[in-house]
Length: 134
Image 1 (cartoon, rainbow, N blue to C red):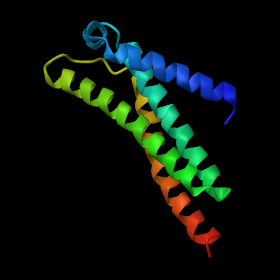
Image 2: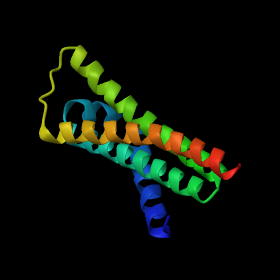
Image 3: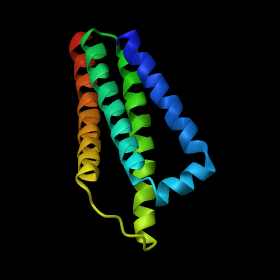
Image 4: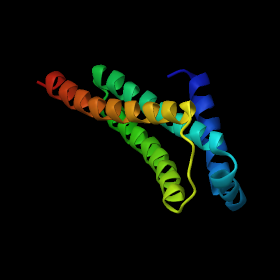
């Protein structure tokens, strides 16, 4: 992974963490800033996908410790996305209907693909470990 990509991810993570920890921001997000919420889903899904792909690359090189760490990071990114998704569902259950936009469909597609890739990456890491250690 390049240094520029690492810095970009770190900045994205820092900005997201600061935004998510602000109580006022949380309230505003739920009611007024649906696009930002959707972009957070895309961000976390993209980060998870990238970490999973990097896990496969590390396993291919025989670096299984790094591969497992990348899978853990992918899981953490998916967990963050899942919390956002759960919040959206809870808001809708409470009676606030959300219009389904193409952007939301894209975010959900992005997230589901990331989940699938992470699961497959875990299988690839296991397979590389078995093959390279025999």
